[in-house]
Amino acid sequence: MPIQITELNISVSVNQPGTDTSGGSQPAAEPAGNESLVEECVEQILKILNDKKER
Image 1 (cartoon, rainbow, N blue to C red):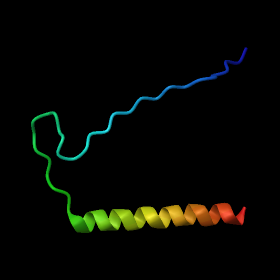
Image 2 (cartoon, rainbow, N blue to C red):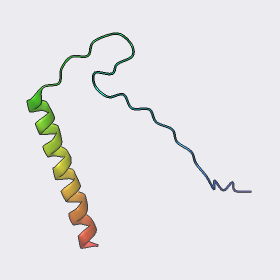
Image 3 (tube, one colour):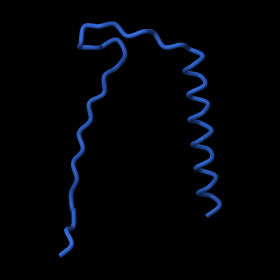
Image 4 (cartoon, rainbow, N blue to C red):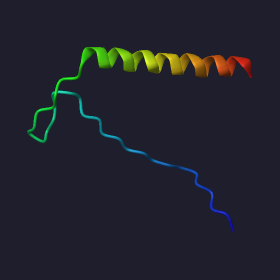
C-alpha cells in the first residue's frame, strides 16, 4: 500500500555575516568574488526563464 505525504514542514536557520555565535571571526568575502557569483546566478536565472518561455 503506497504512503501519501500530505504535509511537510521544513525549518531553516540562517546566520547573517557578523552575527556568528561561535565566537570565531569569519574572513571577509572578496567583492570581486561576490560580483562573479551574482553574475553567474543572474545568467542561470535568465536561462531558466528563457527555457520556460520556449515551452
